[in-house]
Length: 238
Image (cartoon, rainbow, N blue to C red; front, side, top):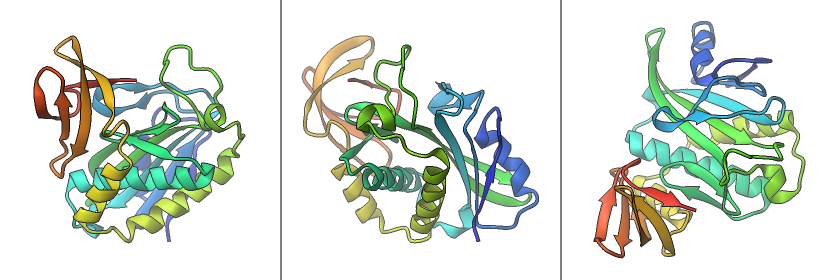
């Protein structure tokens, strides 16, 4: 039985989840807050947060229950969260490689997945920040929320419970690597479209072709031809 815990305020749900794993014996344990003070993003980035407007959510999942690679697990988690939001909003939601979630050209979810050993068990720590009710993003021009992108005020508690149930259900039935790659590329943001990239502090046009099973993104660049990149080696400007 998956558990979902709540904290009125915390620094980071990815950090605080460890305390709950010491006392609960479950394959899936969730933690959420609507007031996260020191959220972390991918590769040391920060995730800014407006109290009582957004959701910080972490799910701890025992690694022993999964046979897929870390890359496939990351991709599949992004797919599940994408599907959840597409169903919730009745919109075409995209995945910006490797695992940001985009709705109508604005980032509404950032995902950070870590691996930790706690109380002799190894876990995937799935952290996700959801912009839900925030209306202004002065410092981040490419960020939005469910409210700004749909005009709908979603209930924070109800959305969190639905998310937990959906994510746990889907993680118990992970499809094949081939299916994961097919669906990830199907919903890949800016795929097969001319986009602007920043590489080595220079800008050039390129077309995203596909992501691969090693976690790389293949881009056909205007000046340099078809190349593959890991995260942070190239930046998509949008």
